[in-house]
Length: 313
Image (cartoon, rainbow, N blue to C red; front, top):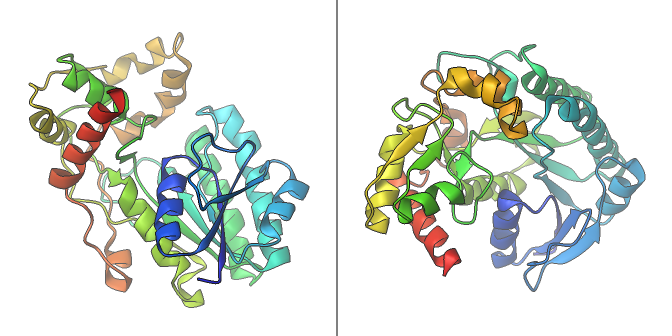
């Protein structure tokens, strides 16, 4: 392929997207502050600080398209300061260079909801992190509506997959199950909760990169397997590991108390609405336009659990 793809951020989603693009013979460059230690052969690297406009401009200058898969410290104050600045820099660089952007987003901008999430739900003013996601959504929507940029948001719920550590269903959870210990959860184990499989997110990102301009200027939900409870999902992992599932779940009411001593939980206090009710995502829009055959948990969970075990060996 003759298109140059820039990937801002080389976490699990960025890495999976890069691998898929490389397999399709695109020219792929990874951009972040420091080069990843495990950067595979065939991927280029350029330094980039998304909080510095000149740095972002420099990274964008040779890119035809950009995948943004960034993350900041899970802290409301950090998000309020960093996300609008980063988005402003990304939009300025996209306008200056004409590069199309696929932004890997989450679903916080909807705030507390009771129905399955759809792309047309109103933006929230609730909380520090959800309201910040709403602010940057309005930023890219305004730029796209004005014709200044070609920008598509790909929204995903909590994710899981081989090599994923910073997730509610991360490596530590699967390693605990394999070691015969209780899986530690900060969510109700018997309430359905949507999870996206990282390879599906990467596949959806590449789908949008290969889509036409008419598919930009809007948000899309990543197809997910039908929501199951954490207990149901982890039972699939336990069976693959030949282990018996035990779960130890932190009561949601204790998150603010424990958060006084654990910074990550402190950042989750305002996000309890994600876990105190069924959390489902409607991806019919993406399925009707592209594809909807998300990886079943019966496939993804065993692969993730066995990958965690193999990484320990």
